[in-house]
Image (cartoon, rainbow, N blue to C red; front, side, top):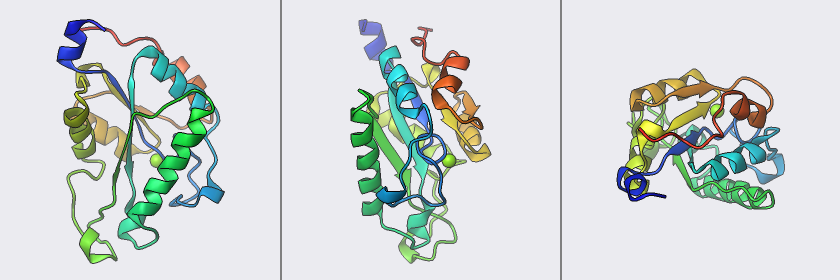
Length: 180
Ligand SMILES: [Mg+2]
């Protein structure tokens, strides 16, 4: 890393979680139901190796809906991290938004700026992790992910296929980020 790189921040690959890293079984939160999307560990390792910070940004309105707790989200995320370790792959940070404007649970009933399609999670990660958004991008499986990326001023890639590694390679995303 050159001094310039550090001064301007680190490039980041923002990933949605459910439907991109793990199979979306509908509010996934139980480790027993966890399954990787094919190619996800290999894709994450390729992004690690290319020099990206890999950052998960995930709406978890299941918390607001009273389906599970924030702690359950953390346990599930930790399980993903452990599972990735055996592939030599690493997620640098997990961000999630537990809020929903019509939450069943009152303290989560907030129209929050971090809930995608808003860019708040991406912006907070950029600030907390010294990320360079001009060399960053996002992969998500829903239109709201892509809208959040646009709102944060970064490219968004809509993943609707079945192998994340092929997708990342096919879009040339695992090559080292270019300096601007
Ligand atoms: Mg998703």
